[in-house]
Length: 585
Image (tube, rainbow, N blue to C red; front, side, top):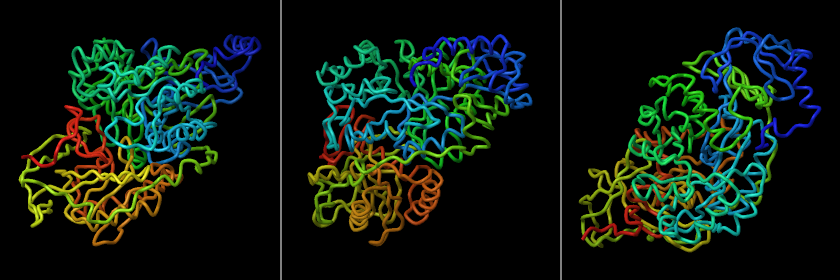
């Protein structure tokens, strides 16, 4: 429920709360001898925390029908991820919940634009249905940019008319990240119609404006955009805070901005800062945690522990108007996380609505089955010969996409490359330049974009995936056309996933039957599968061990992140928002 428990009660409920709070009746549940983190007063209060009918009653000399000995351990509110794409966990909403709830995350603000770019409204409906009846409360921001831009082919187009009905759905908080900021800044009617849907309903609008500063940032905020998770520098963070936007500090699997941005958080601006993961893969969640990891990293870098807890709880609850969440105070929902201390934040028990749902990092709940029939069999590629991967260049000087470690931002580089007798690009083992292709996979258009990439360092074979933000066409990087073709054909065969090929044979494949983005297997299964694939990518294919070989690949088709990206329609320069040539004349 989006509304607070205190706003969804009757007179009998109120009477019961009064009787328990005054001590005339026992609470259903009491945590004895706890240290309760108060995010309002910025202090730790020692005492017994009482819970009744799923809500906090208060801290005091309470007794309970059921009592849990805290033994001086700390109780903090359930953690909130302020911006996440469930699809990037490679698991279904239910399985995602099993991965993150044991780490103390009890609510998330999800943007389903990945599956919406493949399946449209049906994809959003699947996410809504599959996230019901979970101990994780999943709120949604409706995708604002499907497709993300007009410079690629996606599986759907969601205009304002298609989104209008979804705004009335329970758990829908507002409009998701406005990535096509050039369209917004130019006053494009299509994006403004979506903006007005949110404004007219008093809903939140999320931003996505990397490197947007000055007057353009002013215009972005003036149009109603209230948050941004794309700050990668302190200057960007400060600019957003100055115009009244919330700054979401991201620590994901690919983009890891927390170490840089956390140094800009201080006593004056911390309440406008929140934590998010954006994109986090299952092996990272299982190994490092979720928002609990943000807490550890923030405190390690000098942030006051209670300030860090505020950023992970009440700040997000207030920003997204999740009334009755984010605090351990009377009338607030009893989403409670027990941790050992306020440094390591080792999660020991998790309660949602006053019911224990996880302990010792193990989920104590099962997830309901969700029908995937309307979001599967989504790979639809027009047949093509391997020769279509040839890249003819007019000169031996080429424009190359240069990757950066732990960043979504790429650089433009100019390199001297090798061509064959026909003038086509030819891989040379002394040059760190590889061929990359994006194959349209939604409507069998036959579109294939081809470009060159540097710093991926693959020296043999090919890696391919149907995860290619945001339109999620097939993306492949390879040392030779034969293996690139074999990898693409494997993804067509299995209906989507991540795969690797070498010498014309498939090394390994992770099948992702839900929209080519997610598995319906457990997080542990997906993590085990990937843990076997990573060494193959690095040791057998030679992929740069400073990069995530699969997630890094998935962002190279995202034409809203600087500087160069590749779509199924060609090489795209995000600075000029126009296509450019691979050949440098």
